[in-house]
Amino acid sequence: MKRISRILTIVCLIAALAAGTALAADKKFEISLDKNRMALGEKAQLGISFYGTQTMPAPDITNIDGLDVRYVGPSTMMTVLNGQISTSVTHLYSIQPLKVGKFQIGPFAFKYKGDSYTSNMSFLEVAEERTAMPALQPAAIRGTAEQLNLGDRIFLLLSVDKTVAFVNELIPVTVKLYVNKLNVSDIQLPTFEQESFSKVEFREPKQYRERLNGLLYEVLEFRTSIFGTKVGDYRLGPAKIKCNVMVPKALPRNTMADDFFNDPYRGPGADDFFARYERYPMELKSKDVQLGIQPVPAAGRPKDYSGAVGDYQFIYSANPTKLKVGDPVTLKMDINGKGNFNTVLMPQLDTTTGFKIYEPQVKTEENRKSFTQVLIPETDSVTQVPRAVFSYFDPDTRQFKTIDQGPIAIKVEKGKEEAPSQVIGPAPGPALRGQKGEDLGKDIIFIKDSPGPWRKKGKVFYKSPLFAGLFILPLFLLIAFYAYQGRQNRIRSDSVYAGRLIAFKAARRELKGLKHKLKRGDAKAFYEAVFMTLQDYLGYKLSIPSHGITCDVAETVLTARDVDGNTVRKVRNLFMVCDEARFAFMQPDGYKMRDDLKELREVIGYLERRKI
Image 1 (cartoon, helix red, strand yellow):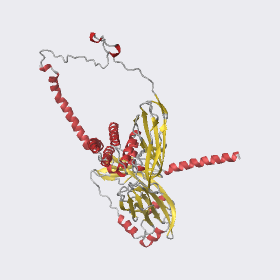
Image 2 (tube, helix red, strand yellow):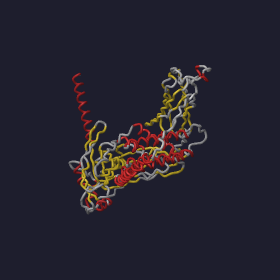
Image 3 (spheres, helix red, strand yellow):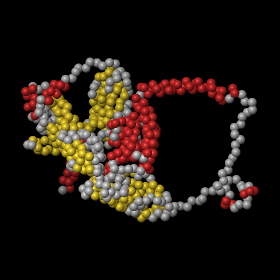
Image 4 (cartoon, one colour):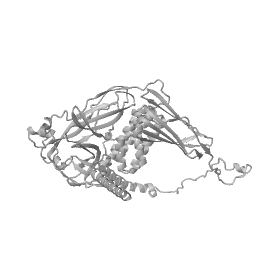
């Protein structure tokens, strides 16, 4: 039996190693250009694709000599080929040549989570003027595909779990892609109109088979959750998915449709398949759905209610409970359950008298949000940490609920006694001899008079430093002029450098405007301005289109450029608090707004010093 168990163990280890090797092999890394010849002044698009995964960060390849390379953003795709689904992520870069010549792009080396990846290489030829390129003829392919009746072979369905919801209540949304005996590539994530709703972020799809109207379909199911931010009746959708349907090449018209609807893949491998088929671009659309958004009731609303909607549990703890004056005590507040965690704010503390308070740390996970608050007792008369109160609205029961936790008893001891400070001064004069020794030197500031600058009598002007400075001044002006000209030339030729300058100037101007919005106390307008300032600054600083910058994009790009983790967390927190203030039912106070403005200044200051 022991021998058999050992053999089984060895077989399992070999199988695990083989599986790991196969998994690493599935994650391919390659680059591609949308054009290999171009003229000066044109732009090309470079795609860096990772197959078998959708979590690879964007590599930093912006230092190709002679080319201006800027990151555009990621594009995640899926492919259905013979009933099998594969995933990939492609990071897109915009390339603009700075001079004429032939450029080699790649191979690039990349490491991620202990695995090493090396790409292929590609070449780009840049000429002074555009050369005549042979015209492509996609019309023949398009016309052939349009003759095929694909209505019941591939289509999209959009559905919601509830058609009536409260403001800030999560609404599960499902988008299903049905495919019957077709090969589909480059399937992008669904999109749909979302005015007055939160941003949509779809998760990895589920794959299964479903029989519908007598036909067996391969189904890709995309799920997400949204919440309404305004009261009213809305139409959600239609959902849209872009993909490519594989169309046979150069087949007779009378046999094209029959061969297309039969099993098209009978060759020895995928390379043979793609050699025989063309990609036909399609945009699938679903029907829209009706949604009604109701206001949260005003009756029975607690005073501390900040907009949380869902069903939650609240866990409260303090550590340590025995400490000295000046030592920190950490309050941990965990909100668990199901609901819209974007609208969950830190529970309110009853009173913080006797404590010094620090800015809380916030961490959001799936179905959980944690708040860490540090308090420092300033006196040994403190006997407990304050009570914490969290209120939320439960849409299922249509009632407000309040959870009280604490107070938690603590024991605070006096710290070490320090010797009182002494003021040391000169020996007391006759007028002070009659006073007690312990009063001498108390509240006395001794002043040492200075005669001021000495000037030699009869000093002449031509021997003065000012006269010498008049001769040196033209030299300094000439150096300053050349420095200014060099800076202007660099701004015109180096778009990245120019973007950094614009980022700093724009941020400084916007920070002044934020001061005025802070004084007015309009939280929504303030955080709208903070969001736009952060987007514009990062766009110029990182050479990325500002309107495409989200919390996740900023975090990915900053992490790839080795930005300090604390600064990356501050950027994420600023995006989150802006979303909460703009979309959630909350009214941050002036202290919170001032702290967030300070954090924004710290982020911009760090990135300016870091010179990424």
